Structures are given as C-alpha cells and as structure tokens.
Amino acid sequence: MSTDLDRWARLRDVLMLQRRETRLLLASVTADSFGTGIFTATSVLFFTTVRGFSVSAVGLAISLGSLCAFFLGPRIGALADRVGPQRGLIVLFGVRAVGYGLYLLAEQYWLFVVLACVVTTADRASPAINQALMGRLFEAKDRATILGTVFSARNGAIVLGSLAATLPVVTGSSALYLVGIGINAASFIVAALLVARLHVPKAEPDAAGEDKKRRGGTSPLRERRYVAITVVNGVAQTHNTILSLVLPLWIVHATSSPKWSLTALLALNGALAMAAQVPVNRMFADFSAALRASALGGVAVCAACLAYAGAGAVRDAWVALAILVVAMLAHTAGESLFIASTPLSFELAPKESLGRYLSFYNLGRVGQDLVGPLLVVGPLVDRGTPVWLLVGVVVLLGGLVPWALLKDDALAVNGRSAR
Image 1 (cartoon, rainbow, N blue to C red):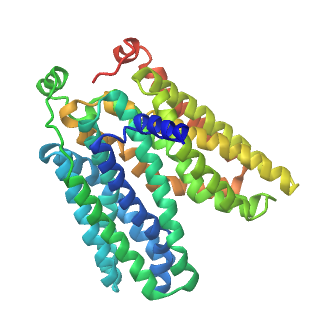
Image 2 (cartoon, helix red, strand yellow):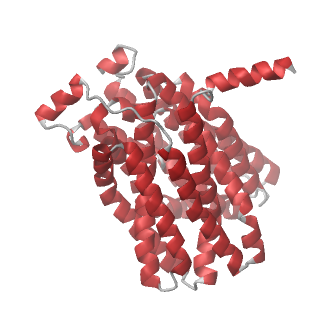
Image 3 (cartoon, helix red, strand yellow):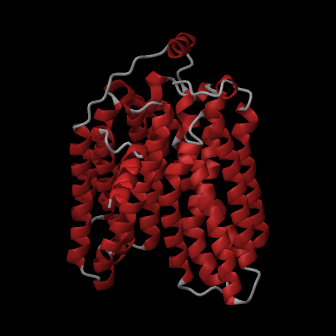
C-alpha cells in the first residue's frame, strides 16, 4: 500500500499535479478534447445523413475554414499578445461554444459554411494561444513536462469522446447526434471557466525582446530561423496526415493485413503516445536536445514510411501485420519526438510576442491540413512504394533542417534555454 502511495507521490511530483495551474490546465484540456472527440467521430455523418449535405460540400466547407485559419491565425496571435493569452483563450473558447452550438440550427448550407470558417479558425488558433499561456505559467524545464502532460491528457480525452460517440453512430439517431454536438459546445464553456480561474503573471519583456522591437524585427516573417522551423513543422505534420487519412485506405486496400488491424494499430498508437510523451519531452527539454529530437523524429518517420511500404509488398496477412506493428512503433516514436521539439518555437520567440510567434509556427500544421491531403493521400495510395520512399526522405530532411541550421546557435552552444 505504501509502495503504491510512494509511486503516486513520485508521479504527482513529476507531472507537477501539486500545482494548481497544472490541475486547471489539464481539466480545461480534458473538457475541450472530450467534446472534440465526440464531434470528430460524428460530424461528417451528421452533416451528410442528418443535414443532407454531400461529402464534397462538407469537405469544401472544411477547406475554406482551414484557409481562413491560415490567414487569420497570426493576427489572432498578435491580438492575444495585446490582451493576454488567458483572455484571448477564453474568447476563443466562447467563439467555439457559440459556433458549435449554432451547428444545431445550420440547416442551410451557406450558414454551415460560415460557421465552419468561424469554428475552424478558432479551433486552429486555440492551441498556439494555449501554449503561449503555458509559456507565461511555466519556466522552460517545467514547460517541457506540461506540454507532454497536456498532449497525453488531450489524447486520452479524445479517445473517451470517440467512445462516447459510438451510441449515435451505431443507432443513427438524429436526436443523439444533436446531443453530441451540444455536449461539444458545452465543453468549451467548461474549459473557459477553468482557464478563467488561473492566476497568470504579466509578461515582462526581456532585453532581447526590446532590441528586436527597436530593430523592427518583431514579425516572425523577418526571422529566418523561425520561418525555417515553421516550414519544418508543416513537413513534420505529414505524420498526422498519414495516420488519419492514408493508413485506413492503405491497410484495407493495399495490404493483406486483417481489416481489424487498423483499429488495433490506431489504439496502439494512442496508448503508446500517451505513455511516452511526458518522458520523451523531459528527455529533450532544452534547446540543444530539442534540435536532436527533431532530427531523430525525421529518422523515425522515415523508417515508418519504409515499413508501411514493405507491408504492402508481402502477401502473408500475419507478416504484413507484423511489419505494420513495427511501422506504427516507429511512427509513434517520430510523432513523440517531433512534439518534443516544440521548445524550439518557444525559445526562438521574444517573450512579449509569444502569441504571435506561436500562431505563426502553428501555420505549419494548418498548411499541412490544406495541402497534405492533396499532395500525400492520393499519391501514396495510388503509387505505393516509390511515393512512400519520397515522403520518408522529405520528412527525414525536414527533421534535420533545425539541427543543421541551429546547432551552432548560442542557445544550443550554451546548453541552456533562453528563459
């Protein structure tokens, strides 16, 4: 009994659960992500079967939303720097609550498109503002831990939300679909109330930030290093496109592996990512280590691409499944390592402009959402092995770019973070 208590005490200390801000952040992320899990699992079915929109019409609305997010994201980040990340995040939660709630009334397609643009923009802007808030609350070493903990909590809550969505999906009940959308809208109100309880210290611009202001270099577009890691982030996010869009088609249509292996592999990915993210983030907490994490992430995703291609080249079902398991292990390792490289986006940003810089960095992910399905999904499924090899090499080179560009930077040479 005492051993269990000791283990819990050590885990609580590692995850900083004794800190009030940690508990509130995790509760907020859990509420947000649980609703998101329900909506993600049911939204396409709801809009196509209940509202009667075509699949292509739904896809067009989502694409337009991603386009809005691409252009408006940095402006939202700059506004959050002025009003503070806490207030900015609360406003975004409010917009999401109202927007998703109005989906209940969106029977006309034009209203659906407008709402899709609003909620997608708020959805894509929120993670960067949330990270800026964490930058205010936690110092660099603790920040690596909280980023990993938040990622694990988010994954777990999304899985639970997806499981809760089983009932409307199985029954096809319009009423249950509406209840799911309502729960998602309410989840953002809960998240906003939790964030409002945080005590957030005011930012104090450092000397480097003041120098950048005097030079007029406060825009991330003027920072060559920041543009580079943003592009790399977009390339790295290819692993998400593969996981969510390519694998279902590849496993079912291009490999001899049993069809049930898809859900088993996705469950394996979720469980491993949740278990590994905190220790991996702590292992690569400083600037120099984050550069290594990016490089190793590229190596791991490249290895996964080679293994996915190999799984499509064998005829035996169990051999194909074994290769897919190896591929998923490498894929999850790459995903965790790329997330562990996130401190680069914090350390290269001036403290007083975290929202603006992190929102710009997030454009890598938004850009992948826009062009990834077009450039990756069709070619991988249609062409197979040659494209798997090409994608693997591109991600590998992308992961190496930060290390090659910044390994001699003062932050890396000094072996410590800027803050």
